[in-house]
Amino acid sequence: MLASGTGTNLQALLDDARVGSHVTLVLSDRAGSGALKRAEDRGIKAVHLDPAGYPDRQAYDLALLDLLHPEADLVCLAGFMRILSPPVVRAFAGRMVNVHPSLLPAFPGAHAVTDALAWGVRVTGVTVHMVDEEVDHGPILLQEAVTVEEGDDQASLHARIQAVEHRLYPRAVGLLVEGRVRVDGRVVRLTEGP
Ligand code: GRF
Image 1 (cartoon, rainbow, N blue to C red):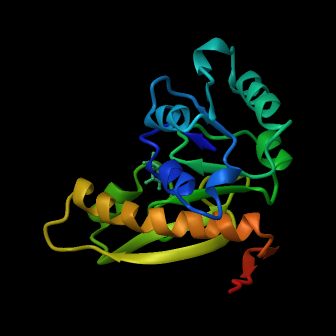
Image 2: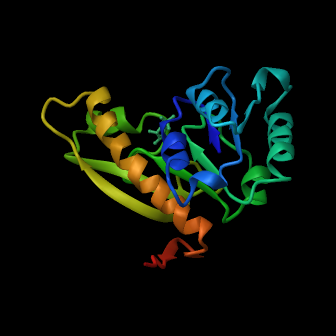
């Protein structure tokens, strides 16, 4: 798992019966991120990979690949605030997934919640998608709408979006772990079992 922030999505994955035991490594570009703390609390390997220790993005991403390669079958992103270079994305093609706080393709990027509010949309939501070489762009596994309420601000809307993320992301990762995802171009076919 790659995360820079508070790690609530990591927590939702850890707490999920299908998915939790599969989380073996949490990696963050930020020291003291909540995600690292949550991993440590569970006894899961937690690594701070500090960008300051590398001359450029290529060197950083090579180090990231070295850490991921031996053990990661699937790489989950949640609020990882670095754009991954093509070699990393290609190494995990079809095996890298992200959760994003809007209904993509609306509002990609790091400010999806404030962008949705500024646009005045009445409905936004959550997208879980495969990662490809463009930001917030890959094939979509799951989406769910969240209504924008009168008087919403960034914090109130993001809180309702996150409540949906914490349900949707474990479901999507569970489908991947169980081999129930087929990607056909942009279209993802899911077989949800009993
Ligand atoms: C989530 O809202 C996710 O959609 C976005 O970054 C946030 C990460 O939150 N990409 P957390 O660190 O999992 O709490």
